[in-house]
Length: 162
Length: 201
Image (tube, rainbow over the protein chains, first blue to last red):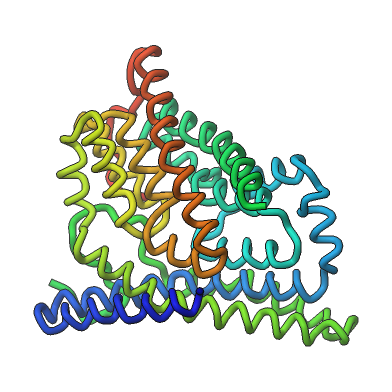
């Protein structure tokens, strides 16, 4: 599945870039520049996260992961995962390998989904910036509701997928 | 239009989220990597049997992530060039009702970049009179279900996980937007700062 997805992504994306390069060289060049910038920008976080995953899987026994983050940990672990996802400040893209490593090591679907959904939707560190641009009502409302919905979405996902 | 510098952002006039970094700041970005490396070294010294799984797991995830990140980065480039941020502002301000929600969803899935890059766009939309409902849908779509992000999610967590989260996030975002809109109407309108911030810090 994932390799099929990877290869189709390569074909579609680089195909589109190729077409663009023939039709508009300047825009193709700009595309590559943005791509390089995105990649370079995310690389430090990427390295740190895969390092963390390596330590987690190599040092923490799977029994501990499933005890504290698995089915048996119950809804309390899901609440904690929502809060950790909300305050963590990492690019959302690198949250996915981290979540996958926890899931493969025995964490429950609900806990992993709660962490991810809160990570992408709630921004605690960027909250002052959000208030400045959108006002207190909107920024606080969006973040608090996102926190609540992250938890609810995770509970439903846990029930459906596990 | 562009200089030959690889770090140059596209000149689309829209506020770019991140400021240009100095080389010193770029190095500082690696501080967590250094900490992790020190931790790895400690494992190697004090718990030598575990260093092999640590390194192997790190390497496996690094390869898996880089392989998917290369086309995702190019896809982000394509979106950025084809869907510049000021275009989003131009169209999103006008829609209302279900059409506005649909446009907000559509424009939220295409862009890239972190959520904080969306705040200036969203703030501008509010000031131009876009409904809070649409702006919340746009922000949460941008945050949670950007297409490049969905690719990475499918790669690591599978299609069922991705589709279910997508299917639950869309109605949640609309419901959240509606609730926030009602609350803002009931409490006497938006509380935007009178002077528009010029640029993201």
